[in-house]
Image (cartoon, rainbow, N blue to C red; front, side, top):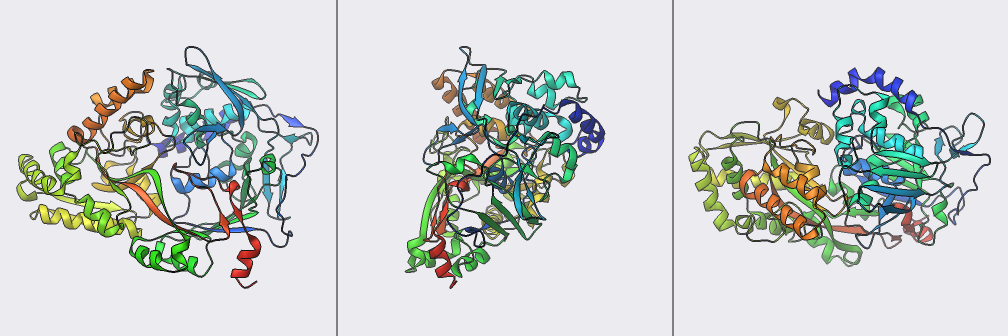
Length: 590
């Protein structure tokens, strides 16, 4: 059953079931004091001006499907854990501490007891605390965590990322069930020991679980607001959240505004920032964003590759330029249920006929690193740079000749009979990359036909999900993956596993799935590394479900009045950012 069908057919059952399993409220009988405010008058909120390259498909923690969406969720909902910005170390957030049982299967998290649920009031223009029927402030608690996990895994919710929680006992069984009952939800390995202690029981030991516990799909969620608001519960004025910021305005396809939650107690921490308001404008084109940055209308922006040398050589912009690594990979994928892509030799030939170094050098100013495997360095179990795996990707002269041989061996000499469409989301960078690949393929396979098409980002993502009709899926497509946590489980298993991952390639289960499952539960680090290396070899050399292009490094501009953190992972936390408001106002002539 498709996700869309589940959403429709299960709606009534979901509403009834949610009413039964909503957690009991935990409240305090006083209004919590507001936390430290910014130093500027209320009439002049310290404002951060940012860019999103598309409208977020969803800011519901259970449904957020991409990095754009999770950027907003990260600012509005707290996780049990987080990652230190300057290191890949798990640190407390909503949880104050945690422990694991001797057998490695039971994790216990103790929670803060001072985080209120809040909502923006459009009429008063203020943030207020949520209260229960007795007028008591609602405090985030262990029952909200249990509800959030149950809601994500409930198949009627239609979460496309629920599979990341399959390490929890019975999670896969619940998420794939045709009929959901209270008994089934209660069988999940998550329970509230008391109001501020939550316990997870796993299918098998997983040393990386504290990282998973901090992901957006495991965030506490407000049952009463979701039941009251339905599909509109994430609208401004309806969204109930608990993070450093909350949603004030969302003009779809135009802009989105977050405002400071004054009741968030972590504002009192020494490392907290001073931002009162974050104004995101939705700008697909990087060149437009750069122009706005140069007129001081944005405080930070990526640098388009064609502008890099100009920016680098500019007396002002050059001093604001940073080149930063990121745990992310840009890759192309193949829908292998569509002939001739059902032939692994065809996929391998296409993968070999790409001059990755030329793309990096001529289109990306030499900043990324040519990829030979999926996960980059810094991810546990990676095979990046190993010449024994995908070595033909690292040298184009050899790869080009192998591509011709493999395509001929597959029965398509010089590409004769090959007719494929390449799909991407239409950004300036994706257009550059895919035009280059289209040209390379046309050169190596002169008798083939390669069309190039674009699609709006949300529709593009929907076409890739394996539950969508295969005839709507693109033949070849561009995609990227950025680490949610630095372990190969987040890459090989959660992205590519045919039954428990995204599986945009629509692959059927093979030995690859057995390898990633075995590595998932292996407790010996060396053995885990060996399993993941073999899985990477199989992925690149034998099955070619995807073909990595490069490991990302990106150029970014930051205004001198912005002090911000950096992260190797997919999301950042803007509560630690600060703006020198006087300096910004002076630059704006105000």
